[in-house]
Length: 193
Image 1: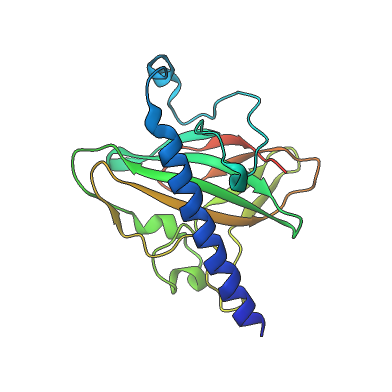
Image 2: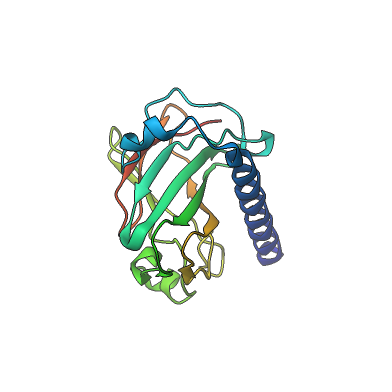
């Protein structure tokens, strides 16, 4: 019964990540007015106070952080939402700004055997609470599958792919963590909720 719940929960999270990605993509179609922000578009998080809206309420198109990766890839962290169930869901958009298709590195999956045997994923992502000196790894279901977007092998030039990752929640007093993903720069993000 727990396997059925886990698979159902994972499907729900994938559907939510896709819905958030589509909502953010539509909200970001207005364009204009952000060209003066391009120098900030680096591996560091924006230092704004941030919106407190949840992904279901139509998150602002302003990312919490933008991480640069190889081959023109950028990962925009759109939300990091704490859930009452004891986990944090990070929703992001992986975009290929390069001129050719980008094949994702197997390093994104991480180096844990249990996660690697489930194929390409974002299982190598971690949240680091530097004050408490703790690192949080992507959660896994009862079969060892990472609770993250799986199966993304490549991203076409100009395309954006919505992705999500779930982590154990840091203590309630922790509102800022460092998000790390192999082959990408790291960034500080704010946890809401």
